[in-house]
Structures are given as structure tokens and as C-alpha cells.
Image (cartoon, rainbow, N blue to C red; front, side):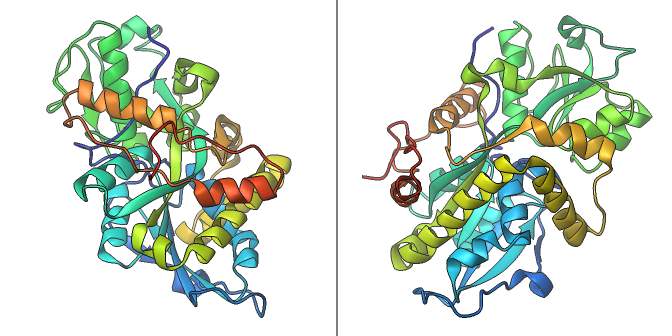
Length: 369
């Protein structure tokens, strides 16, 4: 089995976004929710930047912990001075990309697949990845009465969030490495790949209509709480046990017109990530409080406690893994070979990291010239 792992979404490069929902790297559904009650967060006084507000999008999802905690704790707002945050939450990557492309969103937290999809479909004109945010948090959870070993997956019904999303592509790649055959369009073959919204996957699992799922957190831990067993943690399939699950993207227009605001947001995300990693228990509680505010319900301890440590919060976009993920989507014939040169612009992030005494990060040769 190769060291690279399945991933990259691209729902036909409609990519991953998918991931999400209160989970995932990427969410599902396509409606944006404007959190106007709590979304406009402006630090009183402070420095004056070139924009009066910045519109930030993210999923009410543990893999978007940087946004959840950074906004909840005011760590991003503090760096913005008098510039207000107008937050919007999304259930799906495609809808967030649509908002960015339509000019109603400036900066977004999103999975690798939708990032690729948005960049390729606009022919490289609409977005840039400016930072990483999270790695990992994806697992294969199964019914232990039906599946006891990895080989037992053959012939079973396994859910993924969406066709072509990050987890779907990763699972298809894993299946291919096992030597099994599955039609990527229909999901039919040696394994039945059932594309199921993360919000309904737990019920499908309990009802027995699926035998397992390759899903992000906290869906994976929800399945475990319902009697499932983790058969495989995708992190174990990657070199260095790291792969991008959430990026920070920005509209190229906003980046060009308001680089000072983008830099301030990145300063806030870097400080947020440092706080999360230094205070894991407080950060977990903060993320759960944010989820309760956004969805009306917090995660049960039996779900968030095992889910939280499986997600690595990082400033590094892990660019080489995004490149690998796109190669898997091409291999699965879900997308044409994409031209990704220029998808990253890590100039401001590396400026922030250097000022903070932290090591700079790489764009794996895919940076803007």
C-alpha cells in the first residue's frame, strides 16, 4: 500500500469541500447561514486597516477549529483593530466557493478539494490558498459484527460524504490500492461506495443500510458512539502522518486590494492555532461552545473527546499533500489533470510566521509567481 492516502475532493473536482457539516472538513448542503447576531465582531478602537469589514466563511465543524475558536475567543478580531468580522457558516464547500466567486465572501476556511475545484474552474483567477488550518481527523468506522478486518470491506456498503469529495477520493484510492474495482461515478463494484450526507450517515449506520463509513470528525466519533469501530485512521496512511483537511483561501481581488487585512487575519489564525495547541482542553470547550451557538447543540463528550485529539491544528498548508490528493482524483477519472501552479500565495503567512519566530512553510512549487 503506498504511503500516500486517499483524499482530495474534487467532486469532479467539486471538491471537498464537501466536507462538512458540523464536521468535516467539509460540509454538506449548500446553504450559507449569515451569523449576523454574533458575526460582526469589531475591536473597539485599535489600528485602522484598509477595509471596514472582512467577510469570513467556515463550517460549523471541528476541522474548522481555527475559525470556531479564533472568532469565539476574539483572537482574530483583536488583530483586525477596527475592522469588523462578518462571519458566515456553510454546509458545503461548493456553496462557499460560490460565495467567494460571487463577491459575497472575502476569506474562507475550506477543504482541499473545493479549493482545487474553485481554482481550476476559474482558470486560476478567483482564489489563492494563503494558509493551512488543520490536518487529519478522517477515519474508516465499521460495524464490527460485519467487518473485522480490512479485507472484509470487500463486498460491503461503505459511505463517503459526496462523490468526488476529499474523503470519497481518498477511499477510492485506498480501494484501488487493495486491487479492487469500483466505478467512480456510480460507486458500484467490489465495494459499494454510498455517497451519504454526513448529517444522515449516523442514522443510516444505526439502521444497517450501510456497513461503515470513511468520514471526517466528528461524524466518525458519532458512529463509534453508536457501536462502530475504527478500522483505519487515514492519518496512518500518510507520510509523516499529516495531510491537509482544511485550508484558508482568499479572493484574489480582496488579497490585491486589502493585503493588510489578510495579513491581520493570518496573524489572528497563527495566534489562534498557537493558543489551541497550548490549551487543548480550553480550546475544545471553546469550539464546542461555538458549535452550540451556531447549531443550537453542543457535541456530547463521548463524541468530542475522542474526535478532538485526532485533528492536528497547523499553519502549514501541507501543499505537497494537496498535490497528491489532486493526483488521486485524476487517477480515479473524476477530474482532468488540473493546472495548480499559482494556487498558493504564502507570502503574508510566512511574513507573519517569521515575525513570530516560527519556521516558514512551503508551497511545494505551486506558489504564485
